[in-house]
Length: 435
Image (cartoon, rainbow, N blue to C red; front, side, top):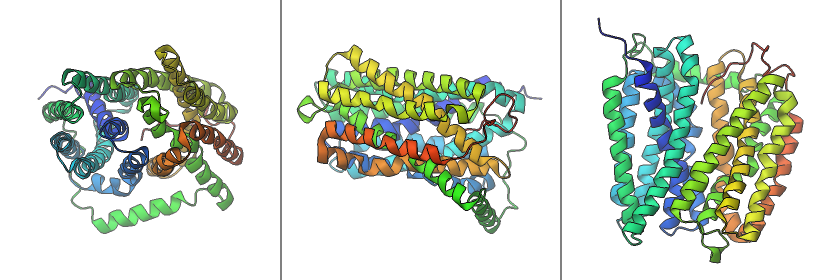
């Protein structure tokens, strides 16, 4: 009998592999396209569409469950992600760089979204409930480390390569993506050898496409009829609009940090940006999320909803200050970004808990997946036109407009109804799930 493969051999690397392509598609691509000369309007429009695979992910997750095995999907998607990274690297220095890199980013996004489905399913199949609980913090940590590595370390490396190559931006990014492709191929080889083969991870040959579509239709129908019509409408408004200010801010704030001072930005180098946003910012986001979870678990979501709504909106004002001061003091810039990201992490806890609250009951896993699709859509829609708005009014007025839209967050927070006991330690209805 073969020795059982320890979860430590694959859980950390599996969730690092889950987080890395996500941050590359959604964040690193912003810096890449900015350095390659695209306008803010073009960057936010193109990269926002790259979120679409995560929006529609619940619609094809039943097919991932029904066809082949979870292990097969994980291994195959990692190979596709590695190949798409190589495709980006190969096409950056070419004359068709925009069309080609967007094509490969699309492949990466769809492969990454599919990998999310398979990896989370594999995790639940292979580990017993006790081990699932034990390793939930481990997988979240390595997902965060992938974010730091992606938008922090990789962007800083790209900046250092540019210095060594005397400003050869295209070739610097090409070399970087070749390196990341190599990392992902190494992850693919590792998981091909080390991922266990759960006995329950089988190809469901008896499942038909018709039955999958029928079950999906029933799930969606029940999702829209969980509560009375008025309460359902308010719930959807909350899920789509609670993060509207952040949806406008998230891409433009990154572009503001690296845009030249002549264009109203701070003019950070890739290395400085990688440290400020990719390291200090992610640490602030993580700490805010941890403290938010502790607070909500003690007193419940209802009590903390308004403080968290303030936390996710009011710290955005630091960008109003930065756009007027245009300070070059890295300590002040780091402090501002940390403050905004800490507030966002703390306030985002309320949003995630409400998704769990709405998903309770029958089909909770499928309903939660649909909620997270709406979560992604809530950032995608404002992101599509945020660059156009910024170019029309400039950074200063754009950040003021973001602050005005914070009113929307307060309005939808006032509309939703929440059980006062939800989220407390003695509330046995709360189950933590992951997108």
